[in-house]
Amino acid sequence: MGCKGDLIIVDDNEAPDYSGVSTLKIQNYVNRICIDILGREPVDVEMDAWVLELRDGELQKDARTTLVRRLMESTDSVAGDTSYKHAYYSRLYDQMKVRFLEGAGDGILRQRRSLFVSAAEKDSLNGNWAAYHAARFEMGKLSNVLRSRAGLREDAINMFDMAGYMLFNSVYDEINMNSINFIRASYNDLFFRFHTQEEFDRAFQIIEFSQPQILFGQSAGNKLEYIEVLTGTREAYEATIRWAYQGLLARDPSAVEISISIEDFFQTNDYQKVQRDILITDEYARF
Figure 1 (tube, rainbow, N blue to C red):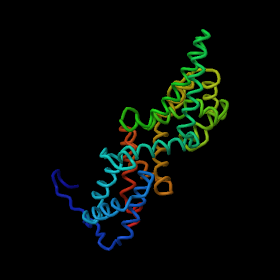
Figure 2: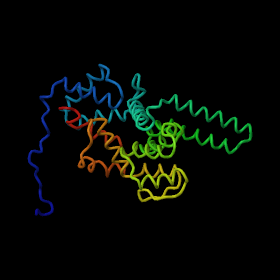
Figure 3: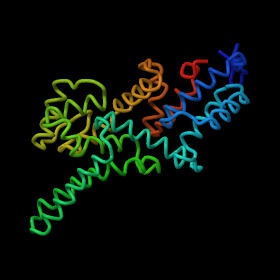
Figure 4: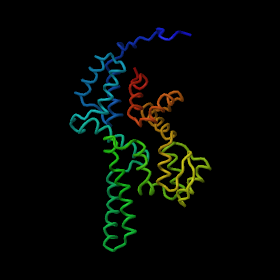
């Protein structure tokens, strides 16, 4: 065993040599990364600049990280995108709607919300205050979904707040009608697995009868509390790591890859880092 302060030398720790990587491979990497982050291909001026930038950085991971961070974080004005940051969060929001709401467009969400606005106005005129407050509540749930893109972009909410909003609204309820289907869908959409019989029995008591039960070591007594418990579990974070790997690499992460990401992700909610760590790999770049 070495003494404290010993110099540890790691053999073969030199930076990889990417000098033999063709320009076409670099262009393919830039194209893929732009599509995956922004949802579009780069224009010619972007392609030329970013290929040169990566070449100047010898294709090392620091150069790739700089490019990825710019596409996720830059607030500089970009023609057609408002900014790269705006485009990134718009794409992530759309991907989350595909995951939870079958890709429902904002037009559908706004139309559904307008129905509740009209109902609330009618109920207020008729003095039906219970129905008025119920309609306002449903309207607010849809507003949470619609505002979640900006909320996530401005760091006012995190990925799992957004997931909760997408589970807790009338559109999700219509897609997954009745308590049985809702429970099945919430487990599948959040965890990518079926619930156990015990999990279902407890969830059914919560959703159908507002009967408090223990799930994942926490108490929940209604649908909102049920969603808050599920979206706060480590399993939801692990599933979201898997979602990132499946979307970017078309494969599941290994147990080692999950263990590398999960602790930091669970503490910081930094989904961008989960993606960034994948996007700068040689596997993704195909170098």
